[in-house]
Figure 1: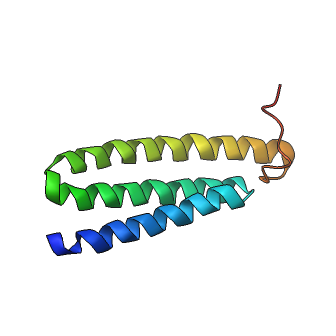
Figure 2: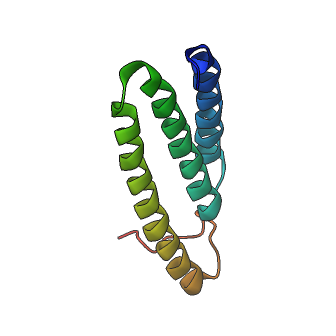
Length: 101
């Protein structure tokens, strides 16, 4: 990616992050919530890669850390969703109160 594409790449990253944040705040389905979190993590990865043009390899290293966190979040989150769905027959977060004391 050329340095003149830094602005559009960061703008796309900001748009993706905004879409993900809006989805987290507005949706009530657990599956959509996790998809929006993944969109936000991918937006951060895009920003790291775009900024790696200016700062060298540090952005690429951070992308690997973010990808590791995203993979762990997806595995644990989907396991929790499956358990909740088997128990409540719904993934709507307003109807789920399993974790409340």
